[in-house]
Length: 102
Image 1: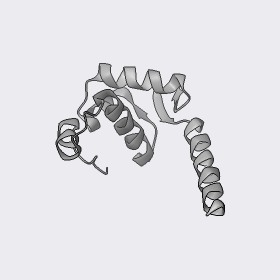
Image 2: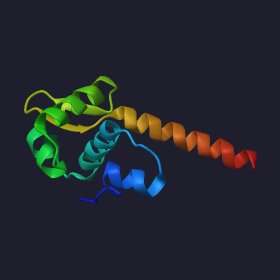
Image 3: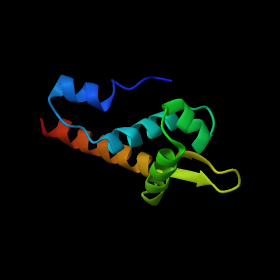
Image 4: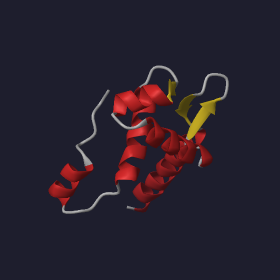
């Protein structure tokens, strides 16, 4: 698994910014799901990311409400959601428009 650029504290020191830890953790969850070869459950994600199961559960529930992850009800595992594809498609369209405008 690819590691994040560092902890929120490290990021704050290097950039002078105060990152939102919950948001960084949510991105870590999305990246872990993206790198996984199979759907992952809360416990497995929590171990991989060294976060509490409660934190991972809450992050996943929040991401699910925005369709950023999909929960398989049969075994309580998660995969990336279609909303990420939609956002990526929007980026491609925006970048294409920006390049044509140059």
